[in-house]
Picture 1 (tube, protein in one colour):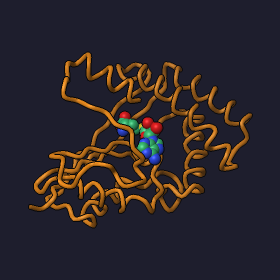
Picture 2 (cartoon, rainbow, N blue to C red):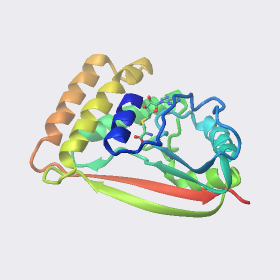
Picture 3 (tube, rainbow, N blue to C red):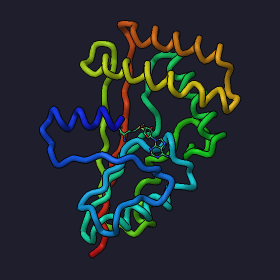
Length: 204
Ligand SMILES: C[S@@+](CC[C@H](N)C(=O)[O-])C[C@H]1O[C@@H](n2cnc3c(N)ncnc32)[C@H](O)[C@@H]1O
């Protein structure tokens, strides 16, 4: 990821961009009050539900007074008309729930977007605002190819985690995975991916 980020920065001539690797579940090795903007995106799949307040406390510490924190998360990786895609989501959310990640009470999605504002308020941020986004990745759209590639990689990488949680056998996961890729390639595949950005200011 860091090599990729460095390559992106170089091609965009962002000479003042630097990248460092840290564990988001541990204290961050940045000084207090050091950033105008702290931006965090798509952490829900790795954050234990109970770890969010501690992380936001850390984000508050490293943001300067008057600085902004911005979170972007999603409840599910898309609403589709593909039975295999939808089944894959159900399997994944059973695993995330068992692993103690943020999951809605009925286990049907992450349930993170409704609580993002509360997390920021409880961490001491104010002047909150939010913006919803949607990507249409239906078969005929520009985003389809990119989302297909994303799903091909992401749904493969998550397989060992699901197997480890004892939700499905590797054989069943492989079969559903292949079927999902086939259904995503159908000319009448429909998919929408909603996500939410919430931001707030650290008081002066
Ligand atoms: C879904 S990706 C999001 C990446 C990026 N923020 C984005 O929006 O494109 C999650 C990333 O977090 C990394 N990760 C997983 N656990 C982590 C941890 N404990 N500390 C820091 N990074 C972690 C994964 O390796 C992966 O690169």
